Image 1 (tube, one colour):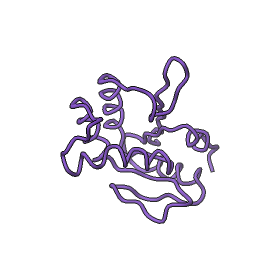
Image 2: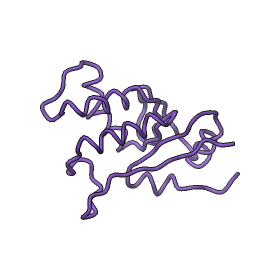
Image 3: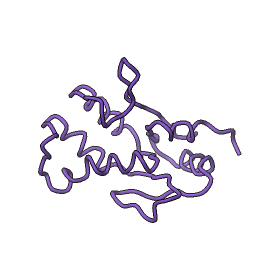
Image 4: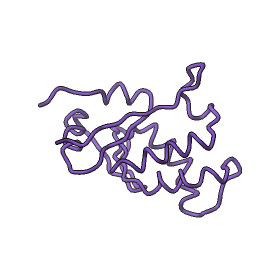
Length: 138
């Protein structure tokens, strides 16, 4: 049995998928934190990893909320901070933030990760979704 790879992306009614311009609410953050908590690990491309790290890691490290962060965002920040992360990138030299760099054949890497025991993998992001679509068995 393989652990599932689940995909999620936030889309507004007008079709916007850009996390930097949409306005999330408490329900969205609660839902996202719950979905992340259901997975053993997150699978990110470089862009999503850098976006999430820049936004959520500082609070988790210091406990100091930036001006833009509402109190109801804190559980999401703690959840994503504690999650294991796999980062697919051919340009990054290293990652931290509880992350492991994935290089080479993306399909083979995802198949390997899916074979490991656990509850599942969780991914998101626009361009990365196209690259991480299901592959035939090797």
